Each structure stands twice: as C-alpha cells, then as structure tokens.
Length: 256
Image (tube, rainbow, N blue to C red):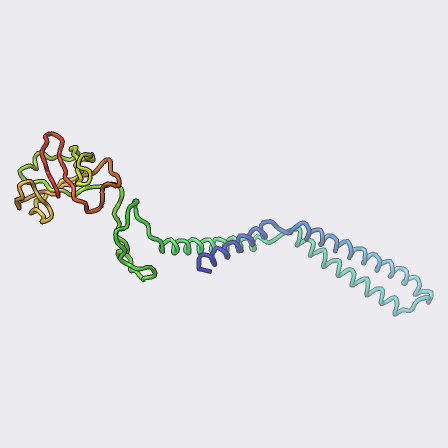
C-alpha cells in the first residue's frame, strides 16, 4: 500500500468519525438508555415499597431491625443507580459535544490535506507532454532517478507540423509571413501539402551543408518556418521536402 492509499484510508476514517459525531447517538442507543431508566425506576419503586412494609413490621417486631436496614440500603442503592442511568440518558440524547465535533472536523481537514499532498506526489511521478506527439527517443530507463528539468523523452509533436527551410538573401523580399506555399515530398511528388510561412528569421546565416539550393551555392540564407495546414502520416520527422512559394510569384525556396 503506497502513501496515497494510506492517506485515502485515513481520510475515509476521519469522514466516518465526523459523520458519527455530527449525527449524534443512534436511535437504538437512545432506546437502550431509555429502557435502562425505566428498569431502574421500577427497581427503585419496589425498593421503596419494601422499605415501607418493613418499616411498619419492624415496629411490631415481625421483622428484625437488620432486615429493615437492608431494605433501606437497597432503596438508596437503587436511587443512586437510577440517577446514574438518567445522566447517561441525557448524554445519549444530547449527542456529542461541540468540541468533539470541532476536533473531528479539524482531523478531517488534516486528512484531506495529506491526501492532496499524496495525490500531488503521485502526479509528479507521471510525465505528460503539453501536446500529442510521437516519442523519438528514450533518454532515461524506467526506475531511474531523474533530476528536475532533466530530459527523459524526446518527443516530436503531432501538431503543428512545421518545416525548417531557407531562403537565399536575394529572394528574401519575396517572402512574407502568412504567404501560401506548397510542400512536396519525394514519396508523393504529385500530391503537395498546403502550408504557409509562419516565421522568418531576422538573422542571416550560411547555408547548412544539408541544404541543396537550386544552384548549389554556399551563400547567406535566412531560416524560414513553414506550417503545414493539412498534415498526415506521409510526413515524417527529418524527412527532406521541397517548399515552393505560390504567391505572390512562383519563386522557389527548396530544401532537400
């Protein structure tokens, strides 16, 4: 049983205690206390009658003084017992004290806090991505102790699907954010994907070695992010594609 199960069980017990204190005595307990009172009243009545009879008889010598004294002691004992069960009946019908209910309420709040803490600790053991995606690699094995902020999985998000491409410096003026593009794959070159320019880097850089421009020149380029608007399983992480601008002119900015 883990900490969360223990805290949940303790919370259930505290809830039961508070329900018991708030609800007062059960009807069966009140009925039993009332029956005890009636029984002691009958016992006292019989003891008083016996004292009266022996008091009259002791004067005539029909009973001894000792027998009379025994009847008086029995009457006094019955009277004391009746008083005791009457006090018990008052306590049963009155229910629990406000202080007991307050203590039970505080204990319930503390138990709830322990459950919340255990729930938070349990939730901290689970990993969630902010969006749906595909796991590319697992950096840590199950059961490993991981520091806060450490990488455990590398995930490729399913949405949005975007492409990193580059535009040569002379063509930069033809590209604006929001411009419509077509994305071609080697797998299905006759079925282009629709997309749009989402980001244009303000800083130039040299053409990466993995990029092939139309004239194969190493020149200054600007990084562009293209968002695909109709992605499907035909697009994969790291797949080479060709991006073609479709407005305002059919200017090509290719990544292979």
